[in-house]
Amino acid sequence: MAADDIVWRSAVECAALIRRKELSPVELTEAVLARIDALNPRLNAFCLVAHDVARRLAREAEIAVLKGEPLGALHGVPVSVKDVLFTRGMRTTGGSRLYAELIPEVDAVSVGRLKAAGAVLLGKTTTSEFGFKAVTDSPLFGVTRNPWSLEHTPGGSSGGAAAAVASGCGAIALGSDGGGSVRIPAAFCGVVGVKPSYGRVPLGAGFPGWDHVSHVGPLARTVRDAAAVLDVIAGGDDRDRESLPREPGSYVDACDAGVKGLNVAWTPDLGFARVDPAVLELTGDAAATFESLGCHVEVVNPGWENLEEVFSTLIAAQFYAAWADELPAAEPRLDPALVRFIRRGGSITARDYLRARARVAEYWEEVRAFSERFDLLLTPTTAVAPFAAAGPPPREVDGESVSVLGWMPFTYPFNLTGQPAVSVPAGFTADGLPVGLQIVGRRHADRAVLAAAAAYEAVRPWSAQRPAL
Image (tube, rainbow, N blue to C red; front, top):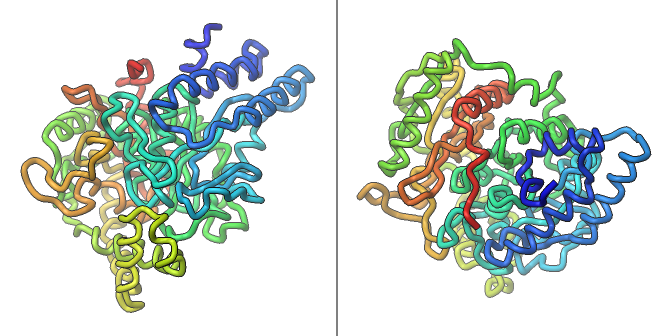
């Protein structure tokens, strides 16, 4: 099998071929490592390529196949892990000079489960410092670039993960999403990004600052690949007291459920956002596809308040609690924008923080009432297409000034509510830049979100589209 062909095969397909002894885990891993070595100097998707570890795991996977041993669901399949997720015995920096030499003694729960399922760990993917911003650059590892256009950002903070998957450097990657950090890079890189329900994937040890909003989820080129990862990493664990018990059934099987008869809401702007016209056209066209799938699609204005100030208050306070003791000594080593964010948290009182938490509870009541009427909510994933890798995020959208998070108004609300959400490719702008459609489900309805994403993928497939690297 040609190396160029192997690296673009889906994880589900590779696992099946390995199980049938038609594909060697060593051959697959070597092909992916060779591609990473060729492309990473331009992309900066990986901050650590663990050649020796990957080769050892691939050899062990191959021996297990030849011996007829029981095989895990992702046996022999190469995966990458975002550099905020702890990996035992493998450097994990959080993109920060403060932790440039940190080698954790434990795995994040999700990483341990991937290993137990037979996955081959390729290395760590780049992130912004502690994932604090939704683009991918850090003082430690520099700027990460979009495979579709090296002048543009892949989004973030799981930008390295999305760039890796989009460029054929591993079919699946593990990311984290505290305000859109899986879905935004998925949209910007033309891949699938899943934010499972809050607690669906246990967290365990890791960097602090993202209490109550952080979700670990997969990035992949197909919906079923993402579902296969969820089958492995989801389910309760006492290391995370907020984790949810395992659901019966398979998430891959849920992809076959279909969506006929569902009530689907499409909102182009959530009632308050400014959206680039090209993004609006592509995502509106994508949303209309659900009519042809047998859904009842209604254009809505949910009437919800913009919670940017609430979200920023919570996260800034939590980052202040986590990192303020490092200041001012560590200030020269940190991202200047992160220092400003931490300092902002120092001005937030306990009353401010608790009132923000109370506002989230009130907001949930509005969203819950909306969810009684609609099975799914569709939105653009971002308000803009990918922007320059070197520049700051836009402060103007469609000719009007927007707030700091005005370019990403559709993602963080669903971190506050904990609902499952997935970004799927909606198409490309005239400049050839990817745009994403977000599918949001009811609380804990991960299976319905995956079914909707898979049904959409079946009529608008995208995995054959590849960047011209």
